[in-house]
Length: 462
Image (cartoon, rainbow, N blue to C red; front, side, top):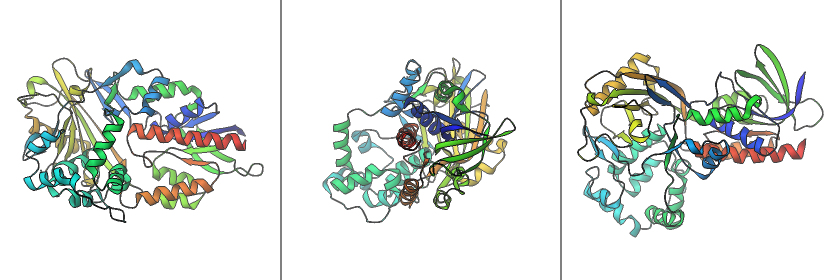
């Protein structure tokens, strides 16, 4: 027997939770179904031997959309802000070099040669035109600024943040504002200067006292019985007779099969899972969702006593955001976040915690290694960089075969095709980190937009 009509959200990661919450705020009857036994997707937080390790993202940018969500669920008092002046480092030539964050630092940095610095500082004086075709980030940087910037700054950033390959990543999809700056002003730097004048200070990096799990837990708690874990979707099809826009969804919960008449369905899963769920509704979904590639990533969190860490920067000590690794360093680590330097309550007194990431598009095979092998590589490389003289007091490993969607060449056309299909297939909506960016704020903003569209559709068709 099918239950009453509701808007169904499939997937209990941050996109699904935020979408279900927004639908609730819009006065819509909603049910969220999550396949696993917990909510949050890749987001989790564990406490181990006095250390607090975030699993998945380590922080988020406090955008207006996510700031509003935090206030709505009552977490404003738990919010932590990282020091925006915290230095970032690039591992180059076996040593940690401060990443240049100001024009003066850019002028003095050893990460770039004189020719590259001249191209950067003269860029506002030159007018260039973006190519008509989709351009990779690597091709863009080489064309505008040279190979030094790509190898020693942009390449590490792409690997550390996107786990991606700059030779494949699409500039228009991954960094659309840079493409727009060149199209509008003929200069990226002129566009950035104008944007900074108009928008003011950059938003800060944030976390919560209890870790990022606090946000997904608060959303799940607020949703209550409207969010069900351990629910496996087995079928989505058009409801027979009646409203041609209505959908019937069959799912397994507690060993029993149940059906739901949905006035709309929002699929907030990975692209691969969305393709599987929607293959019987419209073949075009599977065809286009299957074109989205994912990077596999391993994460190793570790905690040490400060007396075991012999590295000390003369100016900052162990203060800083962490480091990324320049190309050609012969390391498997993509980058390491210095968690306890950014946020309090990440390590016991007299200790420090770190999170290293490995794998990505340029080293996909490492995720298939055993946990012991991955851990040994990560901890050995971290010990080498920071001159650590002992084993960690605690460590934790997580890995994902599908960690981050890649906005590679052609991604813009994939998204456009998916939006076109959604427009002509009544009642089906998509949201997730493969649309507007993988950052938490981008996911929340897109989920809000989709919730408004689903609510409008449901109200017009019930």
